[in-house]
Amino acid sequence: MLKSILSVFFLEFFGWFGNALLRNVLTWLAVPELKLWFFMQIAGLFLVPALALYAPVIYKT
Image 1 (tube, helix red, strand yellow):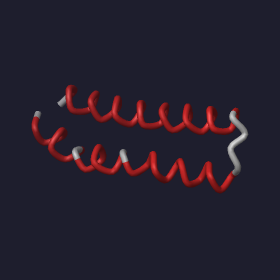
Image 2 (cartoon, one colour):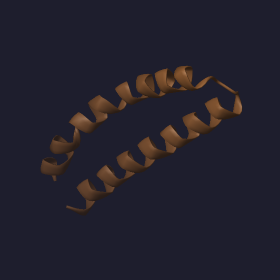
Image 3 (cartoon, rainbow, N blue to C red):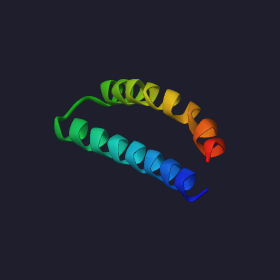
Image 4 (tube, rainbow, N blue to C red):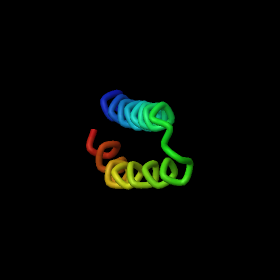
């Protein structure tokens, strides 16, 4: 049980960290807001498969 909780925690943490890092880098590069929103949506597409793996990770252990 602890292993599945830790794996979900790390998935959430690195998703949040990557999102914050991407947002800060694109803001620092002075990317316009519309393009910033576009890049954030593309980055979010990579999280959907990871979020879909929540159930197997939780129920595996």
